[in-house]
Image (cartoon, rainbow, N blue to C red; front, top):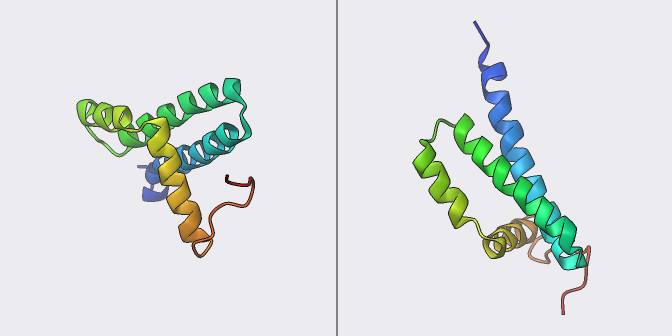
Length: 97
């Protein structure tokens, strides 16, 4: 019998990778590396699917969530997270015009 920690670990790994690839996507987008941007967003979508699958979400529901995650909404999500973690100042890895 698997322990609870072993069973939930894959979900948390997938959720973590989803957020980190989302963050990398935003960074690459702002750095203007288009080839990396496209490849990274594919990984964002993959890890979003995996976290939904591991959470037991029906495939149809998971696919709706994945389709709703656009490049623009990923940037918005990461900017909001960065601002929350930096007392409202946002990321400092690039200057915003």
